[in-house]
Length: 203
Image (tube, rainbow, N blue to C red; front, side, top):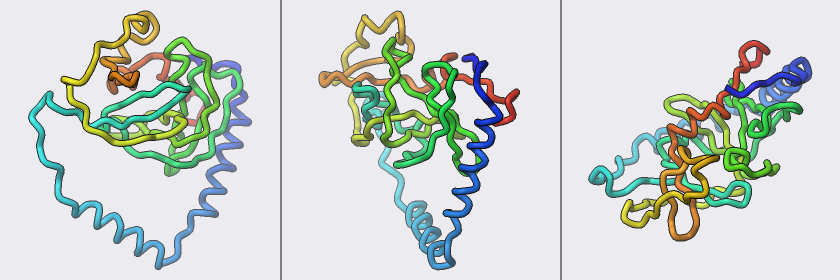
């Protein structure tokens, strides 16, 4: 579990409170906007399910770029994509922890993948991938989210041997374009991305 000592938690709590207040002020919807939102949700829920695919044949992946590297992650681990969000930085935090944000009133750690692969963190300002299994657990900073695509296991190459030391469990394959295919459960369970924020009163 990554440590969080050396962080000014009083300042962090104050900035999160200010962020929440500003979102509440901006987030009041008119009755017309509320009706339009409910209609959009209803249309989404009424869409027919995707056709079933034989197990192991195809994986639906979300391809994105972060820290100059292309990655792909199974869509079942991606709860949503946030195009723009405010992140409260945490000076003194572990390299992978870029800060905190609020997602519907809940504190969400925002992380960067580069340190997990032995590279320096990059201050990406693109969309945020919200990851989790049943609930939001992490926000991953990206430079861009490129596409949702079906990937056949027959098109994949073994994970690069050079990653074995730093990120061997995180990557299960690569493609011919150099995209690293991430193992979602290993990513969410990586001790470098598990942060104990409860004692500081922000979790």
